[in-house]
Length: 154
Image 1 (cartoon, rainbow, N blue to C red):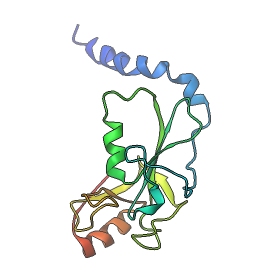
Image 2 (tube, rainbow, N blue to C red):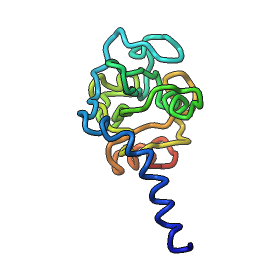
Image 3 (cartoon, rainbow, N blue to C red):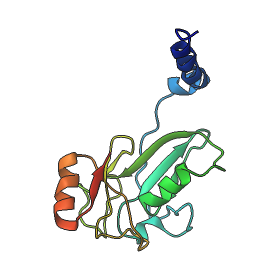
């Protein structure tokens, strides 16, 4: 029976993924350039009107992504137990390529799964609350921490 336990555990992880096989065969979503019309999912305010990093979440069955005025709002959405649709992709602003904090960029998106995030820094998010600040490279995150403090997480 003990020899069977690892296989049961493997099967418990593999079965839910088998249902996603047809979805996995589809092309993965690509990030969408932010426009002036992009509205934050929670606040319903124009995302471009706020400084700091942004996020977009692509859902199964939806053509357009959900927009978030700050990354921490996207994290809250991802952990919402009432969320209905499956997540296809999460993209966040690469603040290493941002021209400034007030202009984080409209098309410098990186995969949220591979980003390095700075937390607990002195820099507040676009809505004036603590923020998880994304960078494509560890070096970019470390340089930010040297100026603004914080901790790098991946």
